[in-house]
Structures are given as C-alpha cells and as structure tokens.
Amino acid sequence: MTILTVNDIRVFISAVEILRKVSLNVGSGEIVALVGRNGAGKTTTLRSIMGLQKVSEGSITFDGRDITNQPPFKVSRLGIGYAPEDRRIFVDLTAYENIKIAIRDKSREKETMGLILDIFPELNKLLNRKGGYLSGGEQKMVAIARALATEPKLVLLDEPLEGLAPIVAKRFYESIRRIKEYGISVLIAESNISHVPKIADRAYVIERGEIIFEGHPEDILSNKEVSRIVRGY
Image (cartoon, rainbow, N blue to C red; front, side):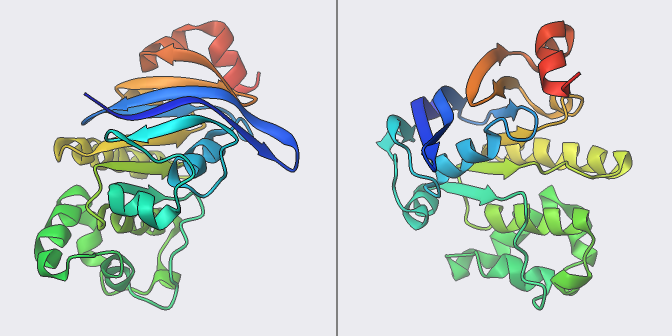
C-alpha cells in the first residue's frame, strides 16, 4: 500500500525552478532514499512534502489525502514527522525535554519514550544532558527521536548520516531499520550513495531538480553513469 505519492511537483524559489516535475512514492512500512549531491533538490522535496516550501504545480498525497501546500502543523498532525538537516535542537533543554515537547498525547508518554529508546538505546544515557553538550551525532538522534515522538506514520529524515564516523553510522543504520519494524515509513534524503544499500529498500536519484533514476539501491552503485552523477566525478 502506498502511503505517500508526490506527483509531478514543480517548485520555484526566486523565479528559479528548483524542482522539475518530481514524482516519487513511499509504501507503508518502506524505507525509501532520495539520493543526490548537494543542491540537487533533496531538501526542497522534503520541505515541500512538509508544507514548508510552496509547490507551484503537481500534487502531494499522504494516506489518501491531498496535502499539497497544507501548513506544516496540519501535515504533522496527519502523521508526518520531520527531522531537518540542521537538527534545530534547543541547546538549553535536556535531550529528554527536547523530545518530550513533541509528544502530543501526554497519557502515552511512557509508551512513546519506550518506542524511541528501543529504536535509539544510546539515548538512555543522554536524556539528562543538555542539547548544547551533545555531539553532532547525538543531536541527530534527538532530532529523529523528536520526530518519532509525534507518533508518525511516515518520517522524513534529511541527511541523518552526514558527518558521522563509520562506527556511529552503523548504529544509525540499525536504528533506522528498527523504525521500519514499528511499521513507520521512512523517506531519507542522502548524498552519500555508499550508505543507501545498507538502509533503504528502494531509491530515487535526483539531479538538478529532476528524478533520473528509480530502483534498487544496489543498482545505483552498479550504474556507472548514475553513480558518477551522484558522486560528482
């Protein structure tokens, strides 16, 4: 079952066309990667889905509803969580407080935190640490945890693996796969193609605002032309 459909969306920023008829879909309980180098249109696609960027043409459907250009708070309440690339952690709040503010149903706080700590067990020892004292990787965990605290059906992750040491990235692979085990769909924007086969069920490649490839993640690596475009050499 398809939970998200992006159909031929076009996005303009300052009269420049950033997305050129982008189409993609995400199935229920599926991890899909949107792969491309910096500036290819990955973040704009996620922001458009979330209602943070105006769509000029095309449509976005989530769980059977047209959410094109809906305000972000409404998109969130319909069941989409979002962890932006810049994390946006409150540095003076603890990790726990950063997560707790996103929990809407306080009567389910224990269950929600249990799910989050099962997905990110490393957070157990960080809950009382202020956001400003967390490493970049730890802040990424908190940002994703905060997105999960809204109890989404789909979570959008913008470059969650960027800048992580290999051993930390491996733990993130495992955590992202655990999100899927809870039946939550995942759409990941990723610039490093070596990560993609380790986390995604399916992948799209975007270049200069256009989707140029759709298929199995391993096929990106084996397709020399697509691989060259993503790597930039």
